[in-house]
Image (cartoon, rainbow, N blue to C red; front, side, top):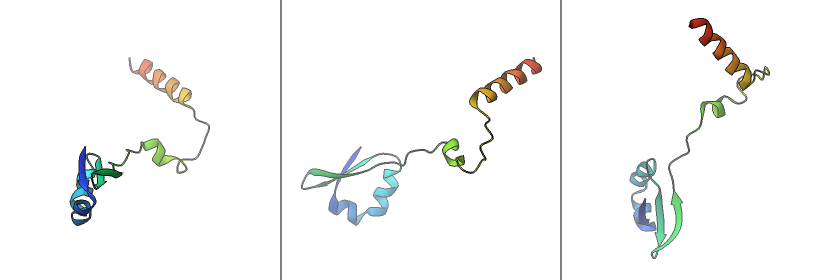
Length: 75
C-alpha cells in the first residue's frame, strides 16, 4: 500500500495509475486519507460469457458427469 498526497497524485497521475494496477494507493489531503485507488478485480471467464452463451439447461452436474464418463472411458 502506498500513500500519496492529492498534489502528488494529480501531478503524477499516469505513474500512480500504473502503480495502482499492482497495489492499492491511499490518497491523502493534509495527512488524512480521502480516497483509495485499487487494482481492478479479476473477472472470471464465466462472468464474461454470461449472456453470450445461450442457456441450454446444461448444469454443473451434467458437466461433472460428462467429465467422469470421459475419464472412465480413457482409463
